[in-house]
Length: 193
Length: 193
DNA sequence: AGACAAAAGCAAATAATTTGCGTTTATGAT
DNA sequence: ATCATAAACGCAAATTATTTGCTTTTGTCT
Image 1 (tube, helix red, strand yellow):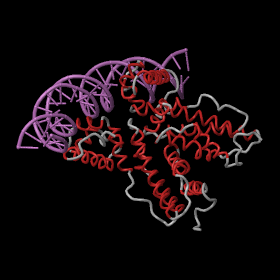
Image 2 (tube, each protein chain N blue to C red):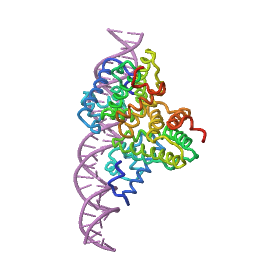
Image 3 (cartoon, each protein chain N blue to C red):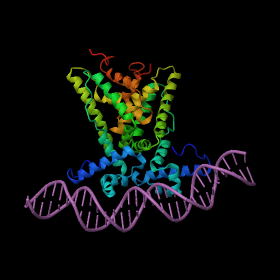
Image 4 (cartoon, rainbow over the protein chains, first blue to last red):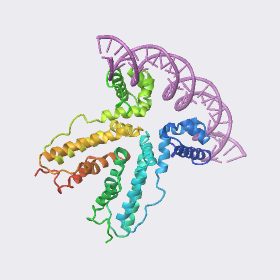
């Protein structure tokens, strides 16, 4: 991610970065992806195109940079009082957000960039959310599956279907979550002990 | 995929298509991705750039088109005489091929295209391979998990890790396969009845 | 406050993309 | 077989995007 490291954190640089990011997001609400070019973004942001070219290299890197920022979770998973329910609620929302048109576009932007660090970051965002749920469950004394297992059993299938096929429906997400929870104790997702 | 449907199947069109595809593949062995532009491809293919623009639209669609073709399986999964072993052998090879640099580039190309049909096709290639393994197992009278479950439990985690994190190692693939096989009968992957 | 260098602006040069139009050539009907 | 038709291609001009050299602005560190 060109705009994150090794650059001046304050003042004009930060202002330009914010302005360009804002321009991209604004344009995405009014135009189609194919119409959004760097000169267009530059005009919207009140910046000269060469600034964008020098900082981000090409439009894919810029779009990926914006997408990563937008994919960063803005709140922590709801606390239902039980780990299995937390995970289900989180997974349902995750599936819905990522299946939406903007969601799918953001994922595509992240994956299309040469710089693979964006994808890695997004994966970490997800992991952190699950770790949060797992940590709360453990604090309550509940058993909870390993985070990597949740990634394999819940997150991966959701993402794969969104990327390669049709978005998973609610029933499918429920099945995935209860399957993952059964790694701990059979049939314990729905009913609190 | 622009080049697959609604165009003349024979003669010059087919020749141009083959020539352009060949040019892309040849260039990918000698250049980096960022250096491959449509004018460069056109020169290599002995074709005028506007032909490529009119047929594929932009370079992402073209690269996706080529990638889908290269991702099409060229042989059927090895037959070890037992479904679980077949699946393991297939999954190991799949993971290795897709984790390689050319493999990851092809996947990225497919996913980066606007036209989502390429991703769908790739998913179907994979499904068909697994269906083949499943069909053979059933012909032998073995139990074998549902293809969709194999997609969720084996293929998805492999692909997710390749796209978003680090490639899965052999031990992990083994664990995924035996987990999927346990959907049928516990601990029956290795040993023939 | 001043020196330094990073980042931005500007404009000219280069490269990619689009487009209009004439030519070639698959395809389907006679 | 030949012909009519339209799809696909080639070519070149026009447009648009990208790169690059140089100057100016402005954070940052002393």
